[in-house]
Length: 448
Image (cartoon, rainbow, N blue to C red; front, top):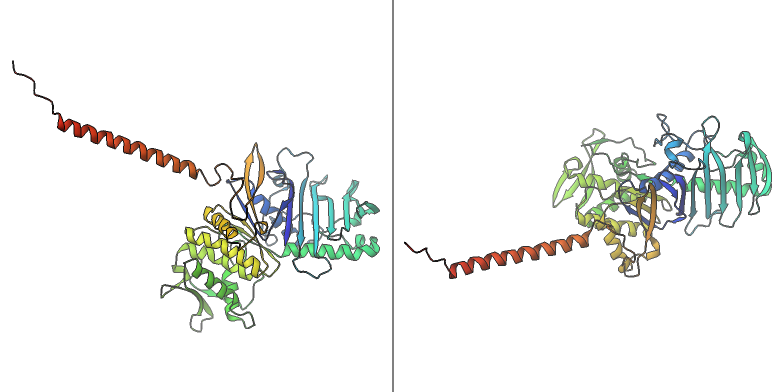
């Protein structure tokens, strides 16, 4: 699980400070305030860690068939007016209940540009939970100094110490570290695993087809648009194994709790090798293609919740899109229950007041502790993103409500009451005038 994130001079962020991440973390705030940039920093590191080129420092994407996201050039990452021209990304992690050699650690890197314009690591710091620290610092002409421990003991400098994919020390550096080299290698592998176990589902999900051809494979990713969602459901329903139907049953359970459908089924279309997804709604079976858009948009959200391996991090952008208020509220219950039962972490960007309000209720019910749900409000002031943690007490009450958090609900209610009172007073005055006019009719003018 990721436990903290920090960005420096990254897009609209000057310095986030150490942003604590919980089993359920929610990012709320205004449009274009910087919420997505927090998410993008992790996706950029994951993309880099999975790059086929081990010499790359940051994989910004753009080349067809390689990376999933195109981040543009280095200037697109750098905060406008930043001095020095460096971007910093860091995170901490901890494996709950882990007995592995590296159960927790910290990654911190800063990036700049070489004389040729290439993106390069300026400083890399890796630290494990026992306090053992390793650093690589860029010197002149592409050489890197290798430093060990809190005292930064120099282990020499060489171009051969250049970090690989941002997160790992190369073989030459590992050998130079001697007995500490194995620890550095284990730490790099643990950091790589944390990044690879991030699953991301964006706000624009793919519309469903009427039927599907199954390739008899079990996908490793759901895709940022949920494009592999149906393949995951087909594999779960059709491949043999002890966990068969676990995902389909989980999805059906939550569709029912949301009041959207009773059940999801996978059905073969004769002997064609094609399959359809059928939704049971009030004793009527319908093809997924023929039901409302809200169901098809939430289906990848429910699927990834049960597809994600224990210990992984699921990033969701606007999971509530096209859902009615009750279903949006139940999403909060999904996040809490799955994070606890399956040890899956959720980082959610949302605009849903219903989702947030239900999270408050769940804290009041003691279904989740305030410390296990980190809630943040993001806005932008003078061109820089600002982050504010929202504190809940044990009864789910928000202790520091931001101004116009979800619009101005109190102001709207006050205005409605004022307008109602004014209209009622006016109607009474008009009625009184009509009544008194009938009681005292005007006398006709005297004839000459």
